[in-house]
Image 1 (cartoon, rainbow, N blue to C red):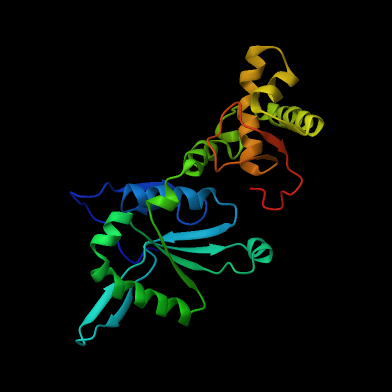
Image 2: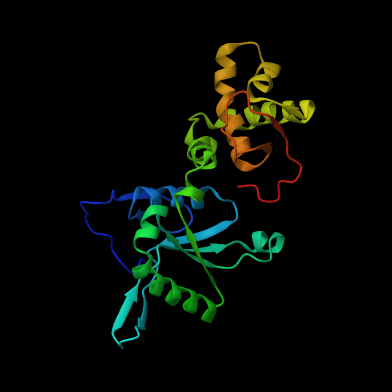
Length: 233
């Protein structure tokens, strides 16, 4: 359970992120934090995360008791750690870059306490800003999260296997293509093309079909059959 409940503020937009990697609804203290939780929900390496996870206490140089609650703690899967041995459970602080500069003197002791806590418990501490979060990857992640499983976009369960097969088989044959070319290679019927597009996005979300998500994703983006898909979601 979160260590701190986020209250109402006149200065920040509060919100929630639906999650399958922790509590069903994770509370975000700001729009930037909401965006970061979205990235965590998308990241196949992340097994679990909790917002506002615990409170760290320490004494300042004057002996006064201080408290600091990190924004989120992230646990990575064993598979992700096997492929990337440097990955450890990480506590994250999310801050706009301009706010970080303005409040650095106040924030620095908190971050030092967090680094000390992380070392003691075999974790790491990492600071992320809008510069790292608000990229084309975030927009792609928002889009693809809606296509994780056919039940999110297709009510007829009987159609799922055949449509997945059509998309994947065409991608295996073409090896490299674009979403638009791939769908046209399967059928000339525009209605059928529209029905298959969600399955294409789902294959990209699962890592079955590869795409460069660091660039804006569109129907004309290069895509390919992804053999290196150990981290499928």
